Image (cartoon, rainbow, N blue to C red):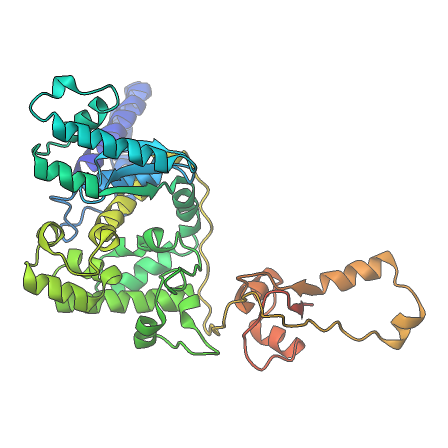
Length: 417
């Protein structure tokens, strides 16, 4: 598929340059060599990621197609009602308040289909579209299949807006992340894995995974420093280096990248167990393995990643032209700090007034200057980001505010000037 897209781009560029050469008229031969050279340069510059045979999609096309829709067609207000196993079997799309009624209607339609397998022409207007959707997926109709479909009605919320924002944020990190992947012998496409994990945000999941690369504390400690005072999971670059090493180790243990990438979500031990019980083919594992925690997220993780790469490669087609964030430089020494979190009733002491201030009210200009010299920490802030914002250093902020370490909390007032 990637090769096909590249050939289309080449033809488009070729046609463009043929037009230019035609307009040049008599100067055709004079400019032919220059034009072909420029064409070659443009072709080389087009694909951010070349087709990689180590990242196959055979047997997963329906799953990849489903996740492309979730990333590009359905937004945060869309509840996609579909099958948990045959994920691209989409029954309906609900709003945030009517999904339960629609799920009940779909299950009733499936019951009606089961009762009319031999006479589908008798289906009601409500059941006929559900029947057509099943047939369109090429699924062999049987009582057993319909029972499974009834049990596996599932919902997935769209993430179009979040994915678009993730593409924009990726500009800040992607070049460095690619370099780190290449250094560890990891496919550079995996620099885009945060599109699936966090949309390139320093997020915290319900399961306690933290940072752009969503490390849990237990896995994070194997590759980074994670303790009460320092949490390198919050450093996008250090956690990227850790992710590259983790993915490399997954590959060494499992032998192929589909399993290694799935292990990023499901765990290396879990995927080793799946490989022992089924095979080294991810599609066969998805079809046959029924481990107790190998569920929807693990089944789909690799397909989500493939879909994310494909959408990123063609994001103007889905989101229009975007202005990506500019790359963030990597400091020589990057202190790591705990991100600000909402404190548990931690009082903020106001700075004591000076004798001069007590005697006379400040002028507007002096008040503005004083306000500009202070910053109230917001939820999620780090000292690194605050230092960058105010053109200073982490060490200077720590000295000004008499901080023994780089931990800060939301609501804290810092001297920044």
